[in-house]
Image (tube, rainbow, N blue to C red; front, side, top):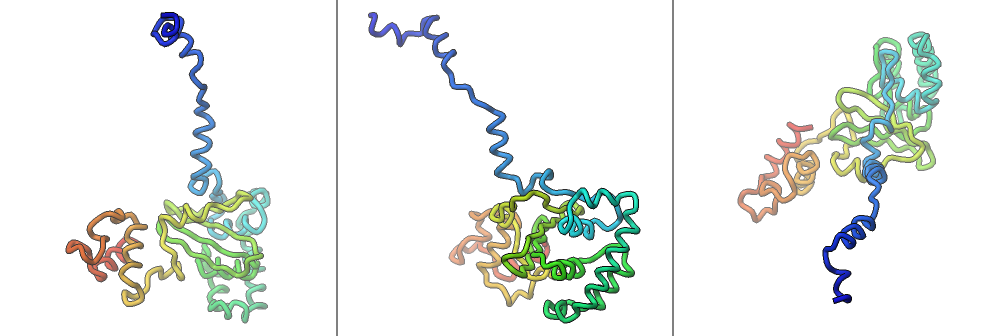
Amino acid sequence: MNNISKYMLSTHNINNILNNIPNINTQNITKKENSQNDYVNVKNFYSPNFGDDPLFWCIYISIHDVNTYLNHKTNIYQHGNQVKMEYIKKAKENKQLLKNHKIKYRDVEGNLSSDKQINITTLKAICILEHINLIFFTEKLWYRQKLDDDNDNCYIRFINKKYSIWIKDTEPEHYNILASRIIVDNIDKPIRSASYYKKDDLREMVIKLGIFSRDHDAVSSNKNRNSYTKSKLYSLVKDNI
C-alpha cells in the first residue's frame, strides 16, 4: 500500500503536482512569435509624416537617417526642394549612367522640378546615383533593382496607400516577404503578355495572390477536369494585381 500511495490523488499529492508545474513565460512566447514576423511589424518601418512627398523622404531617410529628416521638419519644403535641385544637377552630370538603366534624364528632371511627388522612375534614378540597391514591395508585388552586392539595400514598401522605409540595421526576412508576393521586373507594368508565362507560373502566381489555395481544383494538375485553363489563370492574375 505504501508503494502505491504516491500515485493516489491525495491532497498532499495534488498540491505537490500543482507546485511542480513548469512556469511558462508567455511574454517570451509572444516575443518569439513577433520576431518571426518582423517584416510586417510596423515598428520596423518608418512612415514620413512631414512634407507632401513621402516616397522622396523614404529614400532620403535611407541615405541619411530619421533624425536628419526630423531636424528639417520646420523647413521641410525648402529643404526638400533644395535636395531635389541637387539631384537634378547630379542626374544631368550622370545622363549616361541613367541611360544604361533605361532611365531618361529629362523624365527625372521634369518629375523633380515640376511634380509634387516623385515617381518610381525617379526613385530608381536616385538609388542609381547614390549606389543603393532598391527593394520595393506592395501587398502583392516585389521589385528589386540590384546594382551591386556590396551596395546597401533600401527597403521601401507601399501598403494601405502609405509609403514606409525599413529602418532596422538587420535585413528583413526575404523568404517571408516573397512567400505572398509576385516578383516583377517593372513595378509600373507588373504583368507581361499571357504568352510570356507558362501555366505552372500562373498557377503559382494565383496561389501567392491568395486567390486559391494550393490544393484547390482550379490550380491542380492538368489531369483534373476542374483545373483552370492558362487563359483563365492569366485573367485572374491580371484582375488581382
